[in-house]
Length: 225
Image (cartoon, rainbow, N blue to C red; front, side):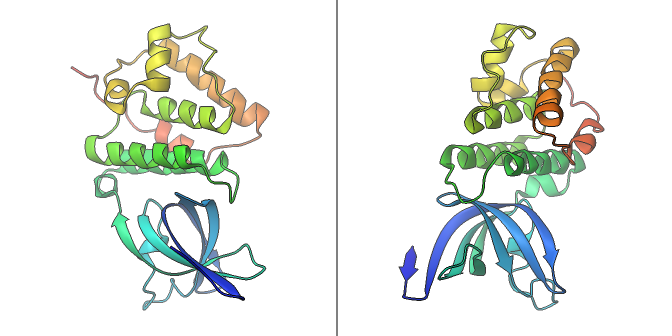
C-alpha cells in the first residue's frame, strides 16, 4: 500500500532487518532489506526508551510488515508502525545458528546497493533464514549462500570450477538447502572455495566481514548420515 500527498508518502513493505546502529540518545538507524523497495536506511524514533513500541521490529533478524513515512524531498524514511512476521526463533537459542544468520545478513548488506529493488536476493535471504531456523547448520551452507548472493550481485564464480568437483559446484549454486546440507565435508574443496571468497572480499572489495570469525570458530556440524 502506498499513500501520497503533496508533502509526504506513506508506504508498507515486508522487510528483514540486516543491521542497526544508534542515532542520538534514543533513536536507531536500521538497515531494512525490503521486498519491493530494496535496502533502506530507516529511522526508528525513540525505540531505545523503555516505552519504545517498535523496538522489536528494529532488531537484526526480524522479519516484519513495516509501515514507513517518507517526507517529500527526503530519502530517509521513518518507521511509524508494523507487525512482526517472524523472529526466526530457531536461531535465537543456538549461538552457531544465530552467528550464521547474522553472517547471511552481513553478506547481503555488503553486496546490496541502497534503494534498488532486489526481489530475488530478498527471496534468497528469507528462504535461507527460514531453513536455518528450522533445520540447523551444515558444512556447506555458508559458502553456498555466499556464492548465490555473489551471483545475484553480478560477481559470481559459477564458471570457476577448477577446484571443486563439478557436481559439488552445481549443488552449491543450484541445489535446494536440503541438498546443500546433505553434502559431506570436503576440507580440500572447502579451502579452495574459501580462498576464492576471501580474495574477492579482501582483495577485490577491501571488505573484512565482521561476522566471519564467529562463524569460522563454531564447531563443524555432524556429517549427514
